[in-house]
Length: 75
Image (cartoon, rainbow, N blue to C red; front, side, top):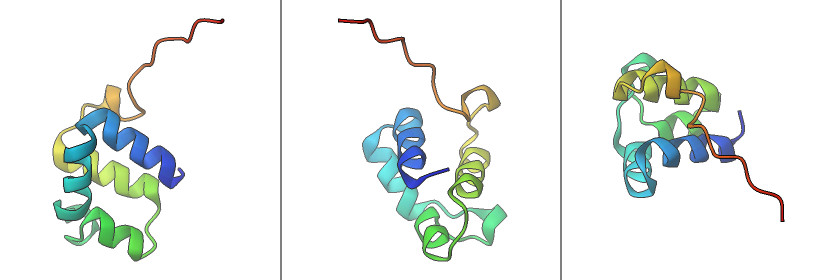
């Protein structure tokens, strides 16, 4: 998972403001109580960080791969 996908999933699920707050403030017990930001700095895989956020925030399994987006219509 790339950092860009991580942020897309975060903002889709929580909104931009809350995603930013969770990234810096949420203690992830499954990763030793570090925040997502600290986990990135420590070299954790973004996929592992996203899974830990989903567990901590109660994101349902059906939304962990992102929300369905409508197909774009051709011009």
